[in-house]
Length: 225
Image: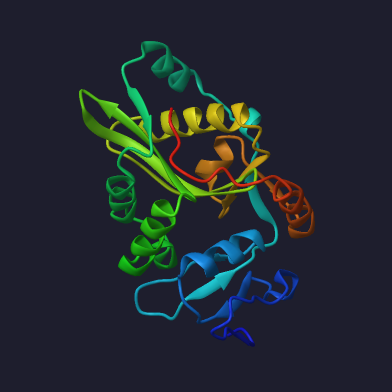
């Protein structure tokens, strides 16, 4: 277990002091203020239903640069068909609800009700955003994450139809390139996100990138497609 236990103050230890597996601290809460401090420090919450809140800073870190998204032949064909409609921040609660029901290979990645409520609060405060993919006015897939400065912290995605979550990521990348965002923090290393172009970078390098991204003001409020 980590040696760091959080107090009522929104202060985190140096992320470089994390355990080898990335575990840094335990406890605290999921208030908007604490979550914003955490993300701005390169730290994120990740825990399961029956554990206290755990805070992580992984080394290496998984990052996707928006202009380096890999588009497969099948995805390119899907995009050319224009069969899906795209929106942003139109039904954040529905997106995160679907994300919370996706089966996960690791118990710790499950979105608890406490986490869902916390990200809904972040969305209402203008810091968390969703991308929705629609087919005939029915939600086919989507994703959500947190935006601070010019960094986007990707949290989760889901699909009910083939390629729908990838279509959401494609349109997110287009939006982030347009707004001059520097990277998407993918956090966890998975074969899926690596197949889409994400790369591992040392935590030290990640924190330097994050600090540069935070030199820009945060675009608070709802996004449009």
